[in-house]
Length: 229
Image 1 (tube, rainbow, N blue to C red):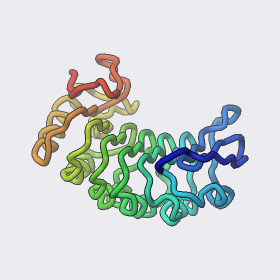
Image 2 (cartoon, rainbow, N blue to C red):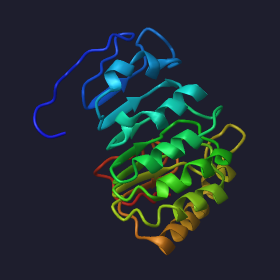
Image 3 (tube, helix red, strand yellow):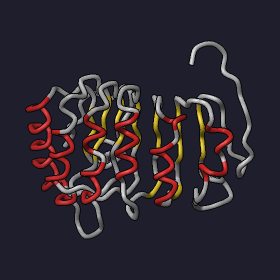
Image 4 (tube, helix red, strand yellow):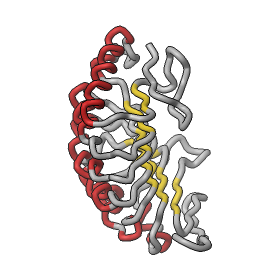
């Protein structure tokens, strides 16, 4: 929004809501956050268009995710952060619907550590592929097969503004302790980069565990193409 930002407070477990941004974070005295009914309780705070929505470190129930796709106030989001909100138990079709709704405005999408399984991926790919303004996409720490990652990369072919992106190591490269086997992972990562370069040229990209156990680096705005061995 242009001009000054009017602030309003919505008391919900000491979480703060502002006119152009809503942030719901993990309660510091609790190990996890259950957001059941969160959007219904904060309906008064969601009457104005939001540019930034952050729901982090917790759980979303199916009805909460459905609310995400239905609120008119979320139609113009620029930044959506669901990092470490566990999504593996619910359908992601509402999230896919939300991505389609905000495709013309979304610039940042963070789905880091959501434990999204590759069987859920197809629900969000059509919406993701239409996010033409997307510059930052964090998708690390999710459970993806090699085939799913290739499919995901193909669906980013039209995202020419992407300048920073992160992806997990494919599950085929993980050992029984869910750690990367680098002898297997290195050629698979090279194959993923080849797949990506067939559809577009990446700018800053990080594929694999974070921080990298080999060089200790993590995704950042300063990180160039990450291909350490």
